[in-house]
Length: 638
Image 1 (spheres, rainbow, N blue to C red):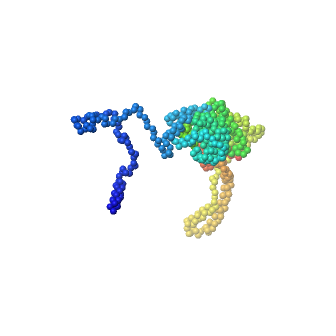
Image 2: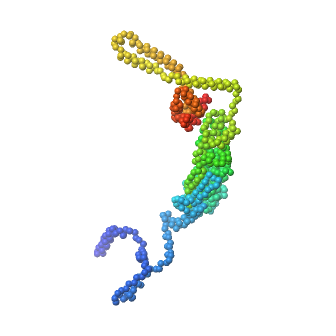
Image 3: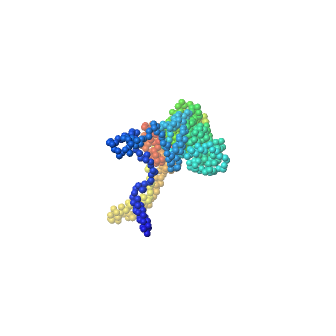
């Protein structure tokens, strides 16, 4: 019984001890590793301390055999001249890879990959050079400013699998947005090694998109295994072999091949890509890299490049359809390209002739590709731009218009386009070309009698136009008489009359009641006759108002001009200022008022004005000059 009592007391004490330990913060902290006494010792002092005891104290003799206790204080070990550096601890990161192995991989991957790569400051280019026979003037390659390491495993795998091959094996489908070795199964890896070995020997087997991209990433990121001179040829061969099956390769490879050459200081592989360059013009963001600028070489302009640089699309012309389309496709391009090629060979300063500008561009190398930090670059380029030279765009646009004018003249079409921005050397070449290849039709020779009849006919037509213009001032205003309105007005008048007439006056006239009915019938008859007469008088105006509307608003505008306004417009087009002033004087209008009247009519049909002042006279609006000229020619022909 006492034993049970003792056990209960021990349990009670243990519970109380636990409650007390709950408030002990030292118990809540994690236990630390035991530390040696040397860690708590103060820094060692190199000087000895001597303590001397005074008097003859016999009681201390057993503890101090001598008067000095220098031997009781421990001496610090001697300090070596160059203390050894302790080894770095083997710290493991979250992925379970040791810090030492990470540093080893970085050291392996930090080897030089580009010419002159000596890890300079980010503001200093890795390499800088001036390409030859190119529109490029200066190229500077810089290291990527921000370091990243999420493609380190790809580099290590690429190094490990570079020289491996595999025996013939069945094809295995593979798809990945950013293909890497770690994303492939054993069957996929076996097929990739077998397919890559065939590609290296020039045998391009049918494969998946992701295998092609993985091999491209290998070439980009392993310049130590694939020399850049060989790598650009491998990239081009791979591109040419698979571009028909995978059309999207054009956009990717056009950018990556350009970056690969710029980073490694290589010229553009124009001979290798010559079969497909015309089809790549509209897919390349940096077209000037793929164009050779050499006075001894051929002119770099092609039909596709000219179409891309022109603001005028001749295919939308209403005269370039049907039977005339082959004429435009052959002779227009022959004339334009011939003029540019002649200027390329004969002009002493081709850039000034076409107004080419030098611009600067900064590119991020291998955008969209799997690229490690050691290969990622920023490229600054100074080059002669074709697509950003606005004067060149205007010149090529006007060359197209001028060539179309010559084709129209050959077809007997009077309509012409405005093409005033063509330099004189190019203009003279185009004229000579069409005079030899497509001369305008010869006019028939007229006899003296025919010439005299033509002069009489033109004089008669001119007289009729002048008479019509003069008669237009005396035409009545257009108005419509409604019999119903006349009858209503008459009834209202009679009602007012009855209210004003007195009773005595109302008894006298016996015809007052029947007057409204009779007068209403007479009013209807008179209204009908007046309307008929007015219709006869307004027959010329109504005939003019019945001009059929056209789908072209400019034709509607020109066709609805009265003879005076139309003659004034022709004087403005022909720059006949004296004749225009005489016409305004005969019409008793100021020149500005005449132009304002024409512009008001233009706004009605085209929502914009047709004339604008040029300081001393008027001219057609630059935006609609061609359309108005076409409408005037159409009215003259009709």
